[in-house]
Length: 95
Image 1 (tube, rainbow, N blue to C red):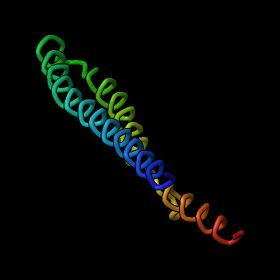
Image 2: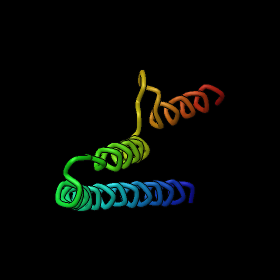
Image 3: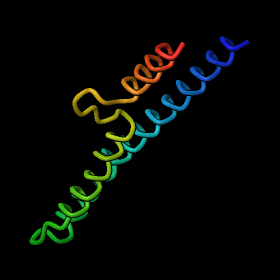
C-alpha cells in the first residue's frame, strides 16, 4: 500500500514538472513572437528612439526568472534531489 502511495506521489510530481516546463516553453514562444513585432513597430513608427529595449530586457528578465523557477538553480549542489537524499539518509539512520 505504501509503495502505491509513493508511486502516485512520483506521478503527481512528474505531472507538475511537465506542466511547469510546458508553461515555460509557452512563455518563451510568446516572447519570441511578440518581441520582433514590438521591434518592428518601434523602428517603423519611431525610428529615432529605440524604446523596444525596455520591453525586451524587462520581459527577458522575467523569462529568465521563469526559467530558474522551472529548471532550478542548483548552487553548490543544494537542490530538491539533495534534500530528498538527506531526508532518506536521516530516516534510515534512525531505524
